[in-house]
Image 1 (cartoon, rainbow, N blue to C red):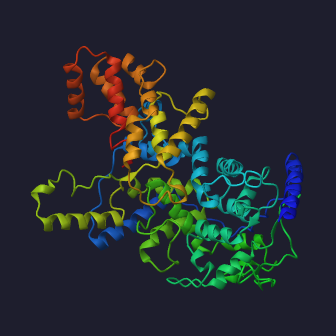
Image 2 (cartoon, helix red, strand yellow; image 1 turned 135 degrees about the vertical axis):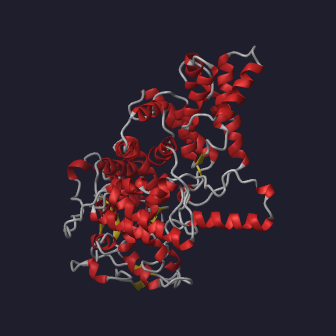
Image 3 (tube, rainbow, N blue to C red; image 1 turned 120 degrees about the vertical axis):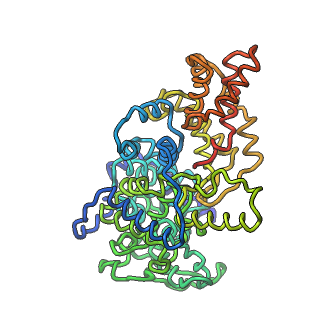
Length: 557
């Protein structure tokens, strides 16, 4: 064992030297697949209308009355949380309200997608499905390099199918070729586990969990152990060399029935579980696996990314009763035709991730209110038990068919991102002062660690905890961010507001992206007037603290 580690360290030293010149010696990227028939160009609005028509069919079939359209500021907040991981700044709100174009939301979506914040934020969200959340062994796995590479791909408008092919078929040094870290994430404790890559490949790129078939035939689905092993064999030739990660052509993938056995193990050849013809005739390498995964006829591929992007936009996958990476086979569930429409449009437009996001953001489902007219202002205490049950059943059916925007808890990075943005009047982004960006980075990481990172399964339903609430209410960060000094929003709003009403309105815009109701304004003005000895800064700090800790702040709606 010591000899093996000595050899490994010797290899890694050489690899470290080569990494310095990896840009010059970088192997060629996986070749692109030949283009298929020219795409049928349709407008974003036309594609969104097709999705709306399909959802309308579901509503009519289930006798569901959809919620009305939400106001524009609410939709802007949703977009900012989904695409940038934070609420919009007061600066952005003012510019948005000054935009008098009838289709201003469409223009703003397009603009937000060109912001570097989108590439960075979506890279982190997608990276969780591709390489997990653990930093792993720094020597042979660099999650930061993978995320930076993925962010660059998104910023450069690289088609999604090409991004996936480069990950699966990558070769090179992980420090110089960020995509290689998709593969080296499967190296742990000096050994390589190709089955880990198979599980991530099928979950992330096919939207199906077949890893249960790693040890036995799937007990609830049609997947066989032999099918899982055949897919794993594509990764079985991977090896670490002085030139980085490569495939050793003569290496065989063998499975031992028992780890302590002395025999060579059972030989397993690379194979796919369906549509073998998509692999091509050039052999059974990772390039052929990448071609099979992203093949134009592989409906699972487009459906998987459509469902994941839907989940990132809404906070929940399209099938709310199933994990985002556990969809049924195509043609099994007719209610998933919405995903198929999104996937087909995605394919027809060169697997453009931005296009997919714009279509989803333009749908009626994304732009409707989270308050359903049947449940608004309902006095549950005045209803009988039977009436309450009927109302609950109707609302659950409305949620299942996307007839109302779902109420979803913000993820930890969205909570802290919103708190930090609300601390400033101007937008906190890549153009902010270096010190501001550094403080945000340090505070965000520390907060998420204390708050509790949901990890890879961040899109599953979560419940709030008492420690999380206490962290927001009593943590040092809350006190620091609400301090009324002239450099932070609290102090600047208190100093610039001409009246109490104006200060309250601005604070609501900064924290909740809406104006207060007359009742809310009246309540806070009364508090102000009841304590005339308190200065304006102190009142502003208390107001900020109240808004930070309101349920509305920590939920998407």
